[in-house]
Length: 184
Image (cartoon, rainbow, N blue to C red; front, top):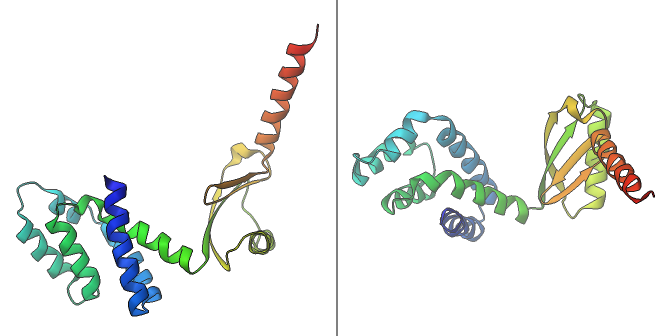
């Protein structure tokens, strides 16, 4: 159900963005609002509290976001609250953001390495990804995981390239175990 809600409202916002030519503006606004929604625990408590009626929740949203967010974004929030789906609002914004990024051919690359990468290494990864994908731009999320021992793991969407020493050792161990089992 949550995925359906996210897709339905996210697609509606995406269509609105395309029709009005405001993909970039609504993308940035969605990112800002998502940050607020995800980090403000008091807002979440009020919006999810069963004893606060819908009309009161809508007034809270209008007072918090009115004049600070576009009328389209506030209207979407009010509609989602009216339908009782506020708990899915972050998912709606995440879905919308992913749709706009896909439309604009902006990929997200999750890069995990055993140690901090240099600027030259990061640039080499960026260039290689641009050469080997259909994306024209990338947003990178870097993470250091010493358990990889060496090498890197790159995930773009559902594609994973695992060039870590940890993975190579695991494959080698598996192959050696198969060899042991086959020996007379």
